Length: 298
Length: 298
Image 1 (cartoon, rainbow over the protein chains, first blue to last red):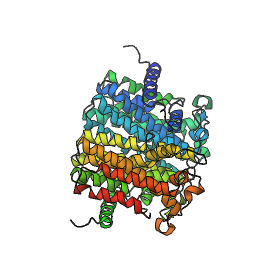
Image 2: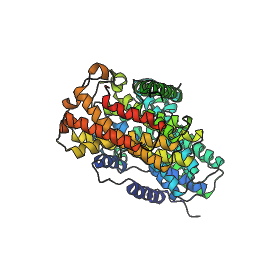
Image 3: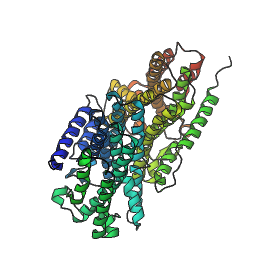
Image 4: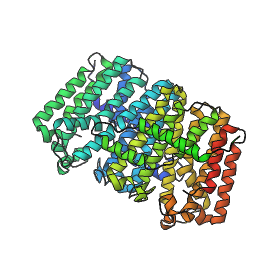
């Protein structure tokens, strides 16, 4: 077997997602076009499409065809993008740049940025619901919608963001930081895998394995993200490192130190790989993506 | 037949909705409770529950039992409330009071207000999806979710809000004002009736009639809302009249004058009643609510 080429795999899948997003979320003709243009500005601002890629990769493990999974994969990216637009607002993290380009409110103003986020979140549910057009049983579509709500609402991502806001400038323990990250980033990453597994036709064992993979992947992702903010290269990341420290955010390196944080990341990657143990070659992309976290530069 | 008592009907239905909202959206135990408290602050800040009441009334016309419709009725109120929280933000309409009490961001700060709105919008889809637990076929649930997205996203309410922002301090024609209102308020009102009709088991003729009723009801509602802002009593409304004029908002009275605006409201109420012509006593509440618009004081 030739070695799995992660770089070309990611590039190919990113292209697939970009094309699908372009097609399903075009600029409308009417007076409402400004808000969609604003939504699209952030949607096409250089995201790596990690959540859609994980979603499709999980569907591959389940052995499903990708067509019925693509709208949901797009929905995951839309929810992720909405969260970035709102997180960047002056009242929240007050970030002027993301991925090397001005944030949404710097380009369109705060009012449109709020609405552009709202529009992405709302429309994401259209694309989840649209899976029903592609032959996915409506019962599964409803299940997937509820998983998305749980992962992105106050029980997931929004809850994590609230905890993040509350913890700024405050000493918190590792358990709280982990709890925050499981909600703020972990929940949507884990849901990406679970949704892919369901729409790909996986059985309950496979779905649970994907959720477990997602849990550990999410933590490893966040720890390595924190590490990049300490050790990363601004030119590669498209943003300045040190922003967490400047904002007094509680991070893994701040609490555990660099060496122990790296060890924790390795441990979670190992746990993620363990969740894939019973799957063969079809899980190779997920294995490669998980291992890549330990050497990521952006 | 005794005359229909609208006042006690509305009070009874409001109580039903309040109790359901209280039950399905409680404060959670975890660290995320602050955002839910903020969401609930606005959710229980004196709303008339018009959208849920219209939804249940449409289900009554369809002859359905109300239990499977109640979660969706709650979802409509949650989407309406989220839109008010975000519209009130300093970057949008910058309102300090609504219904006589401080707006969400005045109490919880802007960051939490953004997230409280996001949480309400997200969780609304859980309660639409939850209809499937009450025996509604999953296919119908998916249809209802797509109607909600269309009515509340850029093709509906958000689109209307964007047009509203664009039209401030600018001369626009009546067609644009009408287009704005059909999107900003009409779409969700109309969807409330359509969703009730579907979940109540109505056939396609009934569903179309409810949508038509909603269209004209929505316009009559907005015109009478504009009229209240000119002629209303601050003590009854819980907000100062004249805020549209102060913000240079384009309204029906500003474009048509008072007399012609009242005539337009009457005309839309008549059209709304016409849409109910083939329904008997079961449509009496909807008729009474529509006629009430012409004498509303708040």
